[in-house]
Amino acid sequence: MAEKTADNSHYFDPEKYNTIRISDDDMNDAKSKKQKTTSTTLLNLLNNPEHKEFKHQTLALLKKDPKNLDVLIEAIKDKKVLKNKHILIAAVWESGMDGSKHLSDFVTIVIENPFQEAMEALTVIEDMQDVFDAKELANNIQKMEKAISKNTVKEKFFLLQTTLDKLNDFKG
Image 1: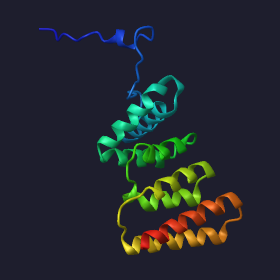
Image 2 (image 1 turned 90 degrees about the horizontal axis):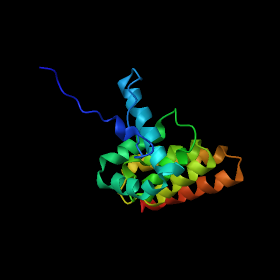
Image 3 (image 1 turned 60 degrees about the horizontal axis):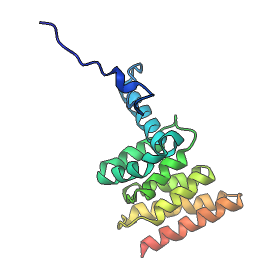
């Protein structure tokens, strides 16, 4: 007996539906495929003018499951995402998620990334609520002090110093 499959092609008719494709079957490497798809889909939902109405829904959905923070962090670290990375970073604080378990990642972003991304990472750090391991905190303070001593850009100095002040506040 022949297997019957449903014809779902009508769902991809742009005249009738707005469809977001979540996977691309043409990619060979499954992990790379998943990462590219996740990063691209998140950016489209949070930034694309065609999907503007989905931004708040996406942020609310991200907050519902703590595992989604890890998905966002992977997307932020995705080296293929060159433009609009600040939108992914902002999604952490805009969704109300606590990025505390990724303190070191956000400190690195403040130090190494362009101003707009660094500013969003600082906002994530300012919103952190967790109690931090003393060693991890000391390492991040040391990294920040080293970055401040090497910095020559006035605007970036403000971000670095503000981040250092916040890290010192976490010490208590």
